Image 1 (tube, rainbow, N blue to C red):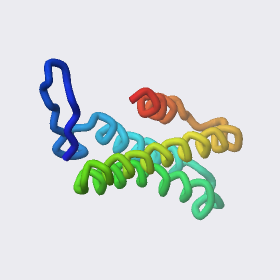
Image 2: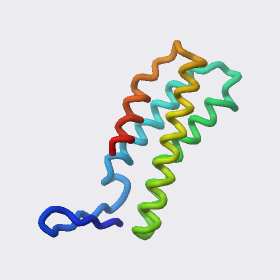
Image 3: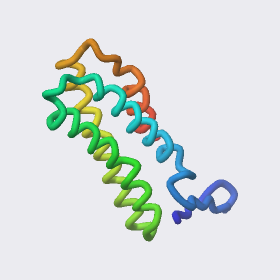
Image 4: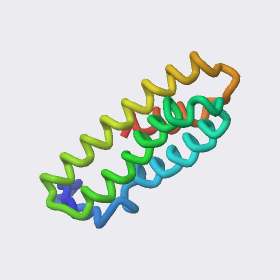
Length: 117
């Protein structure tokens, strides 16, 4: 649980990752990464495809795990999730250069949403 000071001295309580839009959007990102990587060549199964999937799954996993801890630890886990988003972004740029025929629009849209939050 994390408490933030809001307008008028009200406190907003985040009870878990479902209360965070980024938590829900990060699950969409995982699903989209799986959709795109499914179309990669078979030889990428243990390479870029696997790496992208692990990095993407790390985002909601860290948000969920962090939400079950103290405020200080939650902030740390959110930082780890943010690092994983950067990792996904870099890997998608590489993937787009290697496999330009795939459609990465939804992936980039979801990544940009995360970076704005």
